[in-house]
Image (spheres, rainbow, N blue to C red):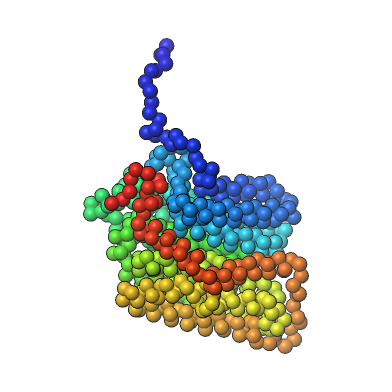
Length: 522
């Protein structure tokens, strides 16, 4: 019989032995909270009246968690928690820096508004088939993507949000929804496959998938490994996820088909996860390769923003027009990625946070306008400004914000990006941003004149009043409008956070030291 070994094992070489600080649990708490709440809602799928009474307060708690996490990161810097107490890179790390925390808090605010709006927009059948459980699951995927410090787990969280987005997209099982769902699924599965291939390639080259570890080793492998091929694969995969030109045709073919609240959630959040991944992988991990691809990215950005808004101008359906405006906004964000400067990246981060709020709110406004004004077709709309002045006024604020006009949140990130473009002599990129702003103003002005300012068509009876269910949806819309007004009138806090987040991407030493306290990239 073997006796007890007297050999002492130094666990400090493999495990984290110090107790985790209470505030650091905020790194994983939002994701765990979403999964647990979603599981509870699944068990209550037949009690449709109870589901929003649980989901909406849970989303309120999620907002508090993510705001507390943002405050924790602002006060103490990047925070890391490694699963199973294994030391990285062996354990899977959740690492939250300022960009991840800012995006997570913004996404939680948008999700709370969507939960409130969903009480009006989703009927008992939609609740029974999983609207609120899918909403919590997609938030788990989105927040997990913003918080993970591991490339393979970034892929896993993309899969989580993709699966739940399929369920939300076909909620109702109408022919148009199924058709849009097939197009959405096919193109996103191609992008996911490219992401998985790139991740396998990455592991083969580096022997690790921990982002901080890759940031350390990239300099050693540069010149001996085909990093440009790897980065190009990631660029193509994430550009397709973000709906950038020329792989953006799936978005306008699918985003107008589901329930309005689902379209709003997708428009506000899903494409921004692709933009986040591009910023994280290309800027923080492979900055020299990003610089080599900067002209390609800049051309794609200009074409995405200009062709997106031209597509919006050609639409008669408000939902389809908004889908093209989502694409146009992605081009603006890619402009900052192409520039790669602190000011350019800060502008992209600010614009992404702005777009999460404003694009979601625009879909909410379109849904309320359709309920109150008779539909989404511009040819049959009119008269909303005289019959529903509050909704019309909030919609006008959102139109001005998405066009980048003062004094709302869309102005400042575009100013930052134009200045950053001119600073490096990229006048044509600055011109693309300005031309896009002009065309966006014309596009939303056209929608406003036809759907809101023009008198209602003759013979059409007045539409429903703001009854109690619609008042709840109006409150959700008003909350997001208040955010864009506040960020426009007092932009300094968001601008400062975006600038600090950009510096953290360009100099990942604080990120690396959070994961490996004894190391930092040279």
